Length: 96
Image 1: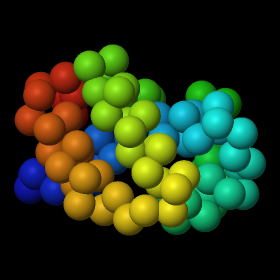
Image 2 (image 1 turned 120 degrees about the vertical axis):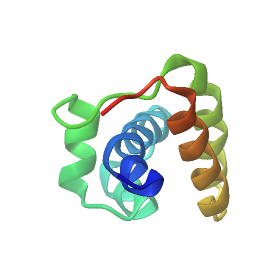
Image 3 (image 1 turned 90 degrees about the vertical axis):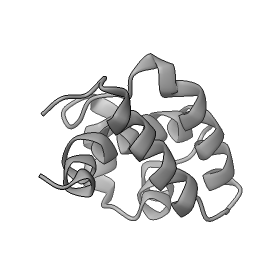
């Protein structure tokens, strides 16, 4: 499996869960979060309820908080998201 395939399947969903939870704790609605994460409100609801996805390892929670702050400010986090995804993947915390 290619590195980005692994990330898309096992790492990115965890980052989305963590971002959704962080943004929700900052008062954003499910609909607003869905727009920011470019996903559906139903997916965000499932992230928040724990029905879909797992959270990121604790070692990366501060990175997610910083990304959420920037996302909430309307910044493009694409490059930093890609970097975080790779760091989590390469850390060995998550296995297939």
